[in-house]
Length: 128
Length: 385
Image (tube, rainbow over all chains, first blue to last red; front, top):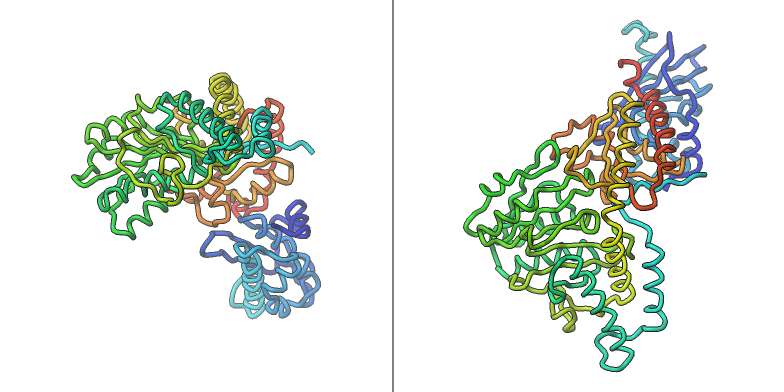
């Protein structure tokens, strides 16, 4: 049912937990199942140097969150907004139909974090 | 890796003695029970001996017991059989029935019947007074389960049967989870129709039965040959029937002692979890509950991730009913019981059985609290808590 990659991320999640003094944070909730993912980012010279996640949800949502913290390493904040659910799903080794929300959940949360980062830069909002 | 099976309400392993009893009927006594030659007569004798065994266990006449392909077919036959014999009318059921009952009732609604779905209390029990008030002049059937598969709550079947009998309404009960686990007598309970299943009691899958009290007005829903006294067409599953009867015979022998043992292990599991984990609740009735069923809710934990975490440690448990484990909604049973959504989404069903050992429970008590803690630590709620 689940790929080895997915199970491996679930078994040993990377970068789980919160981050102090993060440069940006974003979260997203799936309206139908209630899964919630939140990311904290540390950004240096416009690039993500560290990402951490906190997720409430099914195994795939937790695994997708873990995997996403690795995917975004070294990417520019702009590149975060280009990440697609299909790319996350592919990196996870596929998702069952009724678990597709896991990929869109983390993409939406990362986009929220990127938007938060831009808003902080322009002085619209304060840091985390 | 140690493997612990805590999903006996979903299915059970075939008992070795059941398997031994079945084997000759695949390759040696393979005749069709409807054939008049010796091969057929051997098969017929086996089917009728099996029917007698199960009828004796239920305390009914053997002619009143029909073999089916399982609990779902038994529920369909009972409910549609009575409904179509009447042509129209009103049916009373509960909100926490198995889908085999709920969806059959919904199908009958589309065909013009009316249905009342009785609510349940916080323990998952129907209130007999509400049943009494729901009865209408055109009520043709009451169908309420013996025991709930998700939370194990045992319904007040005796009272329900008494009320149905007072009003001369046939009473069907889905006994799939209770049959062979707790003692009951269909006459004392006022039951006209009882569905049961083989694979929940260490018999083979694909076999079930329906007790039909003599004189119950109903029609067949599967048409074909004259099998099962024209109540269920189709060549009998002889090896399955033999296995089912053997499983019942073993339950008659072992049920009482095993219920006490399993109840002890279940309560040890609950006490252990409660001592080690915060924010956990028991779903279901504290005492009127199937001996092996323990339904727990862990707040702030999504059940699917907990089941996966347990699975990776070799422990097989489930989130509510196995039939809805692909769904992302909270269990309709827990919702009907008024369990808040944030608790209902974290519901884990552990169902113990004859293979469950004290060592298994100790292992679960090592793994489960740690898994809950790990999942909670990853959750956004960990910050705000």
